[in-house]
Image 1 (cartoon, rainbow, N blue to C red):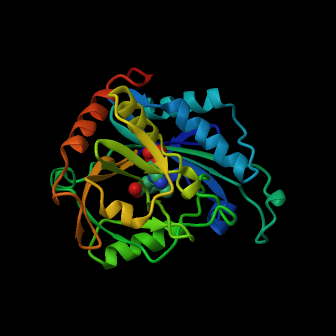
Image 2 (tube, rainbow, N blue to C red):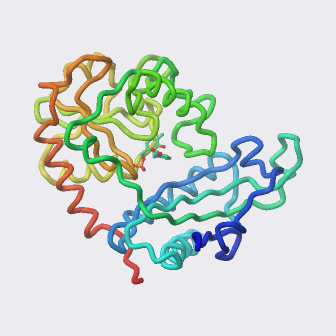
Image 3 (cartoon, protein in one colour):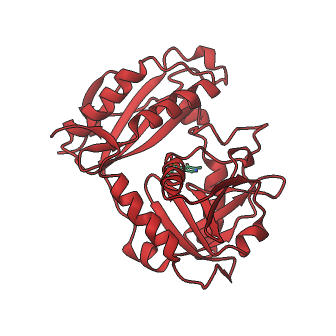
Length: 292
Ligand code: PXG
């Protein structure tokens, strides 16, 4: 039996969960989404994910036809219906069915889709050995065009950079904004550690306000580390002691090389290892609980 998908008010079988060819989500990438994780029946920072989903929707003038509270409830209901304790949830809001023209006002009603899936973990090797990444030539979308704070269904900007990473034989690509400052990777935020200080690009550099980013900053502050958000230059990264990426799916992944240049000693840093462990502990307590 396939998955049970929440779609437009009800849970339906995976093979029945279909989107119209006239949905503006498909035609134009007109919609928003979230990627959420549950750990042993605890949905990590569900409230923050739901808040960001509604902020993204507001950013594209899309009104989600559901309250935030119901959205949280439906997320948990979908996890439960699929008997998933450790999972990855993809919530998608599309503009809905319209005609072939651009006008979003012709779309009658946004579509709400929640997919709860078992988590497919990244290979252990990523965490043990660290990633080698490149700097993409593709620049991060300008806030004046499509603000990177909006988690929209239009991810071509990120996908183009991801293709560059794949072409270079690497897993990830660092993206700069049009001014040449570091913004983020294709689906992860970026952090460096220098002289014991945790440093990450300002959201204004063209980064998504990552939930994992926030959690890592919280952990660091509790540990008494100095945390700074800056306009980061690529050369700052080359002088870092440690470098890592954060995201809901990947959590915290060490990076050991950028464009063939070693970061620090070229191995996974001790402070990164500590943060990985602290984050693992946090996911055991910080979340919305449900029972299967
Ligand atoms: N930046 C971007 C552009 C993202 O899409 C993050 C940062 C990290 O945010 P969170 O809140 O997850 O800590 C994301 C989130 C993938 C994938 O397959 C990743 C995301 C979305 C969709 C797919 O790696 N990322």
